[in-house]
Image 1 (cartoon, rainbow, N blue to C red):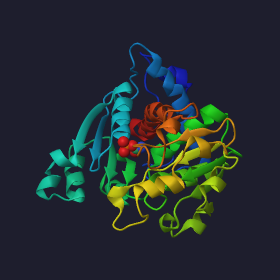
Image 2 (cartoon, rainbow, N blue to C red):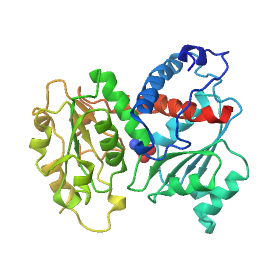
Image 3 (spheres, helix red, strand yellow):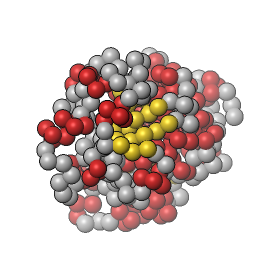
Length: 324
Ligand code: CP
């Protein structure tokens, strides 16, 4: 592995180091040492964003397609910023402006993109497993940018980077994840990643929004927000995902806030140096009060900033195989 400083010099030749996996579809694709490699590489990548010219040649000549079938602000923008900082050629495709609106399937869309020889495809889709389908059809490396209710691996990685920066370590921290557990891909990726790194993870939400396979995840679950927040080092709120709900899971948004919304009063049960996280987009006044979202414990915008560095790291490390 070359010193990361060599890779990041403006005139330096890209000499990426690799990951064992061809694609990043799930946190389960990564060994613990690969997770640390991504976090360490992301830390080094942050320096590029502080330069007046925020660009290194690591992915010069590489073509990256961002294929977004679902709405996104943070993930899509930060992937594009990351690709531009690494000098990749970036193509953005949204379902609304593509032949998907004429009825073309995901598989046919991907076969046609593959014919144009992209090196990496970043895909967000409303269906669980969409990234796996794309990866099966492609020689290109595939990064899952969120597939339905399944996983969002780069979100979990940027969350881990943010926690590690703030706390120095993840091992032994009490992390409480609170909100719409049932519909959350962020939860599924974070539980895996934080447990691998040694955190003590518990979850909290309405009984109607617990995961059917909660026991398999190996986390404690409670419907009491006070119990969940008690002594927590990290409180991570999850968005209520109305767009994925086909029925009624709670009487009203007002009642949800009364029972599960994070307020300054509730936060007092956490450790005095606790941090508040949210993957965004936030429903202010539903899962989180504005006083908390914008308050001194919030690291929500640090998460967004770290999204660029983590995505630079993942792109850079996955590109290793392309060099050979
Ligand atoms: N956290 C997240 O995935 O946000 P976007 O939907 O805006 O990308």
